[in-house]
Length: 85
Image (cartoon, rainbow, N blue to C red; front, side, top):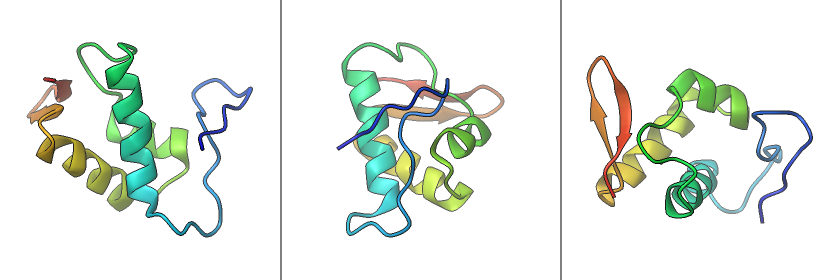
């Protein structure tokens, strides 16, 4: 379950331990935003996602790789992650 916070840009605090992978929770959150139309063209930068979810770059990258494998996003060098789905 996602917990919205009052801090702009922070969607939910990351727990210390999580039985479901952190990267899967990040992927679920981004998938939801793509599905509800909140993100139409581009995703935030990896650095912005790291800050937003307070997660390591490897976790953010794994989440983005999951979404890319599902065909929802694609990476375009020099531009960032674009929504395709």
